[in-house]
Length: 120
Image 1 (cartoon, rainbow, N blue to C red):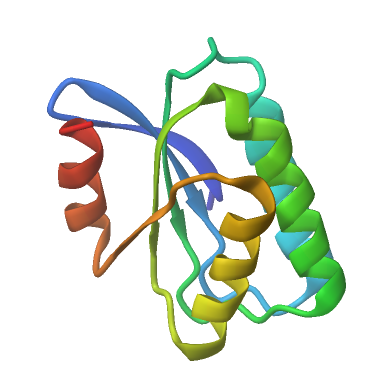
Image 2: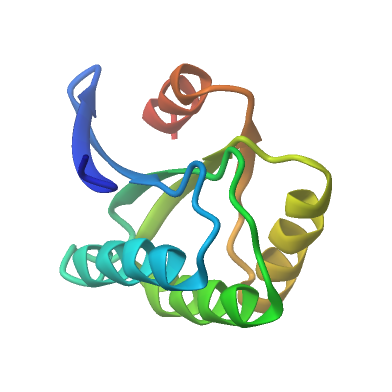
């Protein structure tokens, strides 16, 4: 299964980054790095992104890598939504937001995230 892909919703192209269920740092790095490379090839302020983190496990090195990749992609982002946020993940997300300044919307489902993104 592709973990980073383009999806179309209501005529808008959205990048879907699927980290759901990932437990190993190397697997999370691979998804994040693939997504970052794709995002950085897009025009500035154009990317709509959904990241699914349902059941993903983090450690300090993963958090640092996600912060760095989010900082790199920040100029290309138009809107960013995350689904699957639980207790500790909320703390991780707040850390990423604080470090990067990226406004990230927490949504309850992929469908909710798609709907929010197309309205941005």
